[in-house]
Amino acid sequence: MFKGFSNSVIGASHEKRDMVCQDSSAFKVGSSYAIAVVADGHGSKKHFRSNMGSKFAVEATVETIERFYADTEKFEDNFPRNHKMIIQNIQKQIISCWNAKVAEHIRTTPVTVEEKSTFTPEEFEKIPVESYYGTTLVAAVTGSDYTFGFQIGDGSLVGVFEDGETEMLIDYEESNPANITSSICNSNAASMFDSFYVNNRKLLALFVSTDGLYTSFGSDKDFLDYHTIISGQLSESDSFEDAVVKNLRKRAHFGTEDDISLSCVYDYDLIRQKSDVLKKKIEENKK
Image: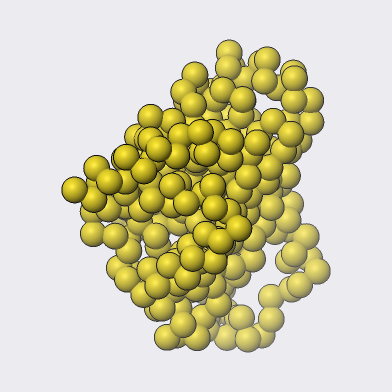
């Protein structure tokens, strides 16, 4: 039985500047699959509606993946053989759905005088509408005996497996060189995704997070240990969520002091069965 949680907290740097939280997060548990997704709106001047852009990216991802799972039996029969092509199609449809949401929002909520006030008319004229809403996106899906995910821009995907091993499923990358930001708002966004696919390996928990969480740790090891510890608490789902949110708020004052989003889906029954494995792994990590 899959369960999940998600939360977004504002970073200390944004609080100091009286900015809104630009992150968004969500999870979705279906009959035989579960989705975890986060998005981080860009903070630079021209992306002045990025908080809405991240919201639309999260919505577009959940809606798109739900459509692909409309016929679950057909999807699960076809996916292992054609996962590369299907993942690419999912990415393209997310971008299309996101652009449709952006177009509808700009139609019903035109740019205000205040939003334009920080630009010269010439500067504003050069900004593509999609850039107002620029955002990263990180998403992952776990099914019956496979897991896949993808991201555009920075952020992290972490899997905790039944043997207690915790791994980053896509290597974390800092911002791209030459100030080129991988973003869902880019005209070539479909070619900027990274993805992964894991088959025949039982997953206990699957986490996606925006870069504010990763940069709040001093090392990859500490970052991965954090996910192992959380996984060890997932069977206590009635009480642990408040503690995780409290910790995220604390972590939002470390590192880059950025907004933090964390979304997780997990196999509740398997977590309970493997509780001793997780406890042993946590103790090993402590030593």
